[in-house]
Length: 271
Image (cartoon, rainbow, N blue to C red; front, side, top):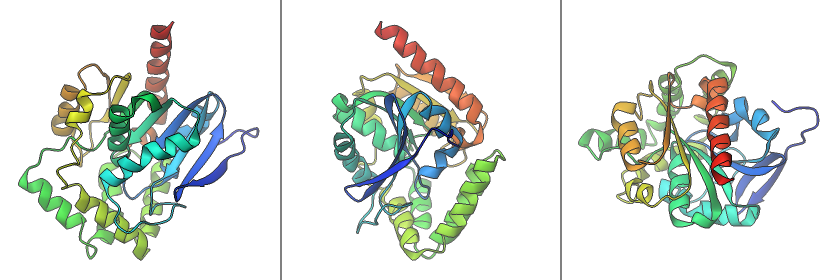
C-alpha cells in the first residue's frame, strides 16, 4: 500500500482517529457507514506520492471512540472542527456515501476549509419515499443490523478485488461487535432525519466538484440518487464507473485516472 519511504502516523482529534501519510496538498478521505479508513487502501498509496493524505475513522468506526448518538448530520457537523485542527487547509475532500454527505455540507457551510470535492456515491440525495423509510428502519434495527452489516457489502460492492475482499471480511468482524452494530444501526436510522438532505447544500457549493458514481450500486442507484445529485450539482464534472458503491476499491486504476484528470484540470484553471 505504501512505499518504503512512507511512514503513516495516527492522531486523535475530538475522539476521531486520523491516519496520515505522504506530503503535498492535503487530501482527506471520508468513508461510508460501517467501514473505516482501510476502505481506501487501494488508492491511498498512489495519493500519498503527491499529497498529504488524512484518512478518518468516523466515531464508532475503526480506531475512533463511539459516541452516544451517532448520526449522518452529527458527523457532518464534526468534520469542520477536525479540518480546523489539522490546520493545513484548504483541503481536497474525497467522501463516500455518508462521507460524501459530510464533505458536501462542509464545502457549502465552511468554504474556507475546502479546495475541491470528490463525491463518490454520496448520501443525501435519496427521495423520501415510503420504501426509503422502510429500508432505514429495517437496517436501523439493532436486531437486524448485524445481518445488514454482512449483507450490504456483498450487494453493493460489485467487483472482485483484494480490497473488496478485505472490506467484506472486515464487515463480518464488525458485525460481531455490539458497539459497532449499535453505531451502524443508529446511523441508518438517522438517514430519515429531514436534515439529512444534501440538495440545499449542493446549490451553495463554490468549490470544484467531481462526482464519481458507480452505476451498479443498488443502494444509491445512478438512475435515482445519481441523477438527482447531478442535477443539484449542475457545475460538477461527472464520471460514471461500471461498479458498485465504492469505485476507489472496485476500480482503483480508473478511479485514480479520473481523479488525476480532475485535479490537473483544476490546476490549469487556477493559473
